[in-house]
Every structure is written in structure tokens, then in C-alpha cells.
Image (cartoon, rainbow, N blue to C red; front, side, top):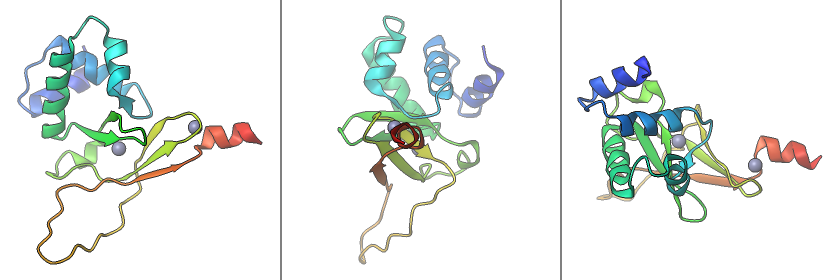
Length: 142
Ligand SMILES: [Zn+2]
Ligand SMILES: [Zn+2]
């Protein structure tokens, strides 16, 4: 078991269960966000859908992961960057959905532009997805 995951689960008062380790393991091993169907496929019979759904929901509420809905309307999940874990709000950065390979990237280090809402409106979360061609797909073109 990864010590890093131990600390993460301890910090959020979550029980250290094998399914939770598995989900963290998959999400942390990827550069880009992982879709829910992808997670289901990788986990196979190890975790049933209901358990997976609960784990994702808990992790999201604790700010361990964040959800991104891609251009196809599919839910994707990615680990939040460590520096964001202190905050109550979600890990707010731009997301990039490549229209060629379909990968969804967390553009960590980017910040969302300030959004001026009309009086009386309060934002709870903001999500912004840029669609286009990623670095790998644009090099493959040339
Ligand atoms: Zn691409
Ligand atoms: Zn992200």
C-alpha cells in the first residue's frame, strides 16, 4: 500500500479500504482525467458500480478528486493537486478536451478567469473546458 494514499485517507478521516486504494492508484497513475466507464473497466469485478459511485462521491466531497464533464457529457475524475487540498472550494483550473484523441487534461497551473456574476448570484463551482488539439496530436499532424 502506498504511504501517500495512507496519509491522504487519514487526513480526511476515511477508512483505508482496498477499493479506495485501487481508485486512488488508477487516478494517480494517469496524466489525464479518467472517465467513469474507464474506471469501471479497469476495476472490473473488483468493485461494483455502487461502491465505485460512493467512493467517487466521498472523494469529491472531501476535495481529493474533482469531476469534469467532457464534451460527450461523460463524467471524468482527476486527483486534485496537493496545494488545493487545504481549500474548501474545488480545484479550479482549465480543462482541455482533445477532439482527436479524446483525452481530457487538467491544465494545472492555469487559473480560471474571474467571472462577474449579476447581483444575487453565488457561484459554487466553475468549470471551463477548452476543446481543441492536444500537444501530442498536433505534433502527429505535422
Ligand atoms: Zn490529443
Ligand atoms: Zn482538473
